[in-house]
Image (cartoon, rainbow, N blue to C red):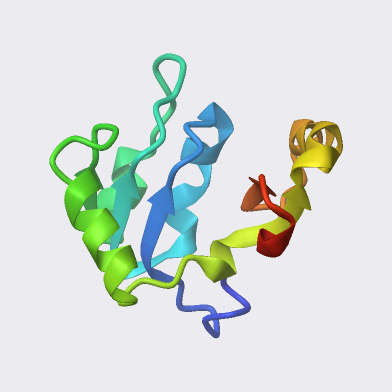
Length: 123
């Protein structure tokens, strides 16, 4: 993230994995005054550098699952105001489902979402 932002950091970071190790470094990806949105639910308590968060003056917001935002999110997607295509790393046909799940199990860092479609038109 630092290279893409000339060393400045991102305005907003969504932590959606809930992976414990991400909480150790996520603050470093934000610009001073940036916002961290916690979406993923970790399996338990996580280490979090409160001093770094305060020093960078980041805002921390949380989202509990889809409570109170699901209908609004669907409306934004349906209106075309939000494009989800950049989030889909690769699309698999239904007959490739096992391959898709094996790929997901690899946990490749560059994969965001792997999509399985039921009809050949969607591939």
